[in-house]
Length: 413
Image (cartoon, rainbow, N blue to C red):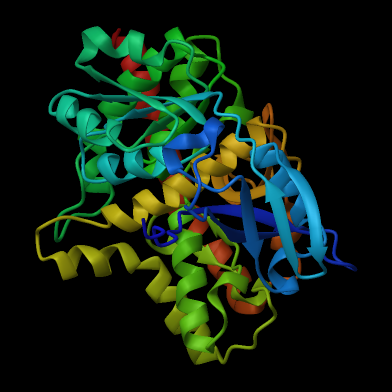
């Protein structure tokens, strides 16, 4: 019998790489290639070899990559040489993840990507309709997690019971000519109700908010959790990873850099001018003309509209959002699993500025946010400093709008 050709399976995630002379670790995406030749009993779904080989240049892996990979996948490291490593794979699929809004345009591809994670033991998919078929489809993928579907409010509590990470992409998508504020009246109520259920059934879970407008829905979630007496600001996240993914992609294309090496912190919020890519903090270091800074900043801020217009009424940025959200989910799982070197940008309760919520790089740990990273906001260029001050009024207004909505609903109840 002829040998079957080798196949590869890649998981995108984030590894933080410390550099000599730098106090701030740098976020990096890394890929794990599972060479599919011989079955592996403990991870037979992928029919992987008994090892995972991670090959890259030293500039990507760095000296600290081993700890990130070992912590994420409970592996035994065997160093082959200074630039190539071979790890014995012993995945520990032990975390429950719930996707609320799993039948939607973001929810379906996001659920599929989460199904690929070797750290997930149970994947709970919830929506008000059409989720049974999505769950049946995804459940056929031969990866470790067990998939269950839950339909409607009557099944929401069972969906959330014992969950470690809750991801909320539920809501209506943007349409041509629609701003994120236009989404508010519908999505605000959806997020309020879902987070209320989370508070009742898994109050200790990491809560990842995707539903737009994030600048308002995260404050709404915080107020609901406060009203329930279970608010932990370290475990509530607005997923702004797509802004970072876009910034990395656009900068790499413009400067002809190797994409895997590029890291651009994005701060502020998650809509229009509140999205502020700090191009001066790009790693590896890159120089930009004033014109390039302006063009890149505007494109990153308006990238969502770029996709909405390109789809011409057929949808919004669902696929790239799902990819970015899956990256944040994987980072959250790695942090829960004991990886001590996980950094992501996220819209969270913050004291880095005079605003109560702000997107910045954060260090993740088992209990959520371990630290906010203030150094990105130090030594800004004049352009970045002015943009930072310019975004604050709009971001402040969006935050206050969310808080007012949640408080008004509480009084009405």
